[in-house]
Length: 187
Figure 1 (cartoon, rainbow, N blue to C red):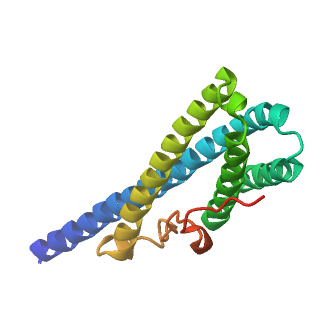
Figure 2 (figure 1 turned 180 degrees about the vertical axis):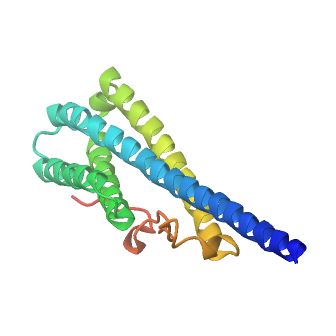
């Protein structure tokens, strides 16, 4: 009879340990996904902060292209607003709009050879390219963290504890369908 009691106590202790391990693993991976999403926000904000300098430089050469500059300002504001929230789709759409606006600014810059030769413009282009690379890495890092989290939430034994840990599947960071092709430049 005592051995039955010991077995029951052992099973309860084992289940409690499994629950603690599962809870911690799920919460840790959820926090990692949140941090990775924050990394995207940091890079989007960095890119948005570089844009006024780029626009100012280009404006000096092409002040008559006000529609292009207005689109950049609106897209930048949308990115800033999206960075404050947690909606991954909204962040992705705002980023895509900003990317299109930047393509248009670069197209304007192509029309002015003296602008392309400007050291300030070249430095801004280099910083923007570095930021784009870091943003790409941040998106991939987030998607990797989400993939790991989603696998945990969908597999036994972790799925049994997902509700207790208040963890659920997250959305991947994807470009909106309308932005799956290369942006076009129109004046």
